Length: 122
Image: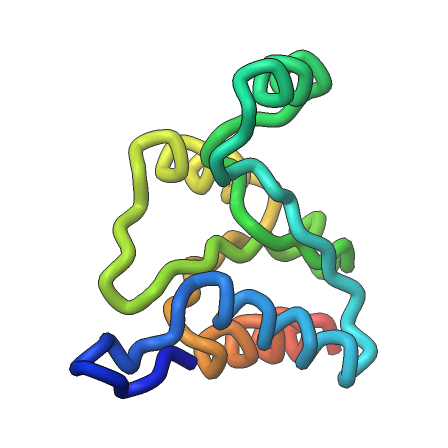
């Protein structure tokens, strides 16, 4: 969490929310992995990753557990004020045809999303 020093924002960053959710999954035996499509990279690295299949806008996290009619759970992490970019909206729509895709804006929302998805399996 960011500190309150000099009136700084007290809201957690997307990185902090996502890291906490990954930690929660590890503690609860939920298989999850990140899809690191974002971030700033050297142009040569970005080109190499593009050729290897990295696609901008693909959701941040994936839980590879099949449930009735869905091939797994994708989670796009955002802060409370974060916005979905057009490339993210495209992937969310496309992936929603075969997967559960949720946008989560807090640790609690992420946990609720995972619990709801896993509970639907029973």
